[in-house]
Image (cartoon, rainbow, N blue to C red):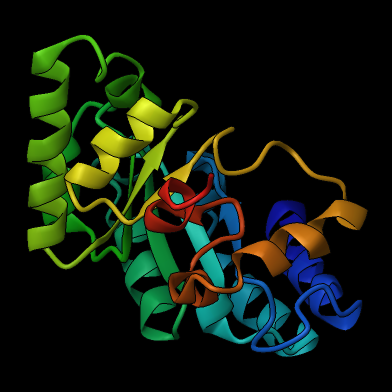
Length: 212
């Protein structure tokens, strides 16, 4: 409860403090544990929090693990309801759980976040590159936004971009920022239109490659 409420309030606070000079409030991603997702009042909690803060539902992304959706029909029903109300759903750390492909079939998703383990060795191991590309192609074919996690080096970024993965998360994009540093960071990334609908922890791969 505190995690969801805190994340939504943070997004509203960013907007109120003028951290985004133009456009909608900053989209915020909230990572939920399996136990939090199984709470019966989750849908009502999220809806009440959005209504109370004024944050548009499309600015909230709920991140879930593969494990959280296995054999839990009540969780799947809650996720369907939240998505119907405009909240986006992201599958976090894809490829590390017990039922990766089953999850893609059973849950209506908006974002697929490729686990860092697929990026770590993509520079030196051809098999890793092939797996990374194959998963990206599958996700894109399903109409999902793909985020590569753990991108830290330029060569990794170039490999990820070669697979048409548009968004990356990692130190090459941003290191952890305090609120006072956030406004300047967002200003630098405003030229990337995709950021209007993705969490601030991600960045456009093309924009990063164009950096000197």
